[in-house]
Length: 74
Image (cartoon, rainbow, N blue to C red; front, side):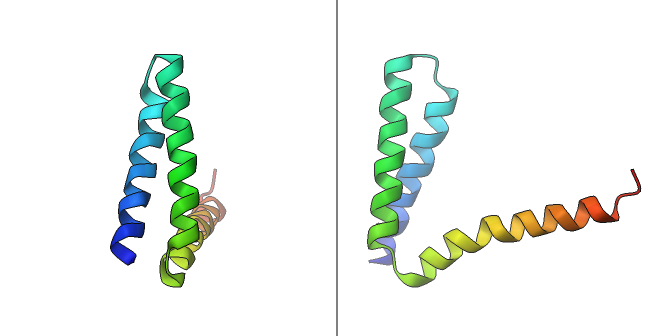
C-alpha cells in the first residue's frame, strides 16, 4: 500500500511541475487536474506515516526559515 501511495504522490508531483512549466493552456489545466486528483488519492489511501510526513515537512521548512530570519542581522 505504501508503494502505491508513493507512486501516486510521484505522479502528482510530476504533473504539478509540468503544469507550472508548460505554455499551452489546455495541457496546463489537464496537468493541474491530474495533480489535484493524484494528491487527493494519495491522501485518501496513504498510510498514517506518509500522511504525517507530508504534513510535517512544510511545517519543519517553515520553522527553519523562521529561525534563519531571526538570526540574520539585516
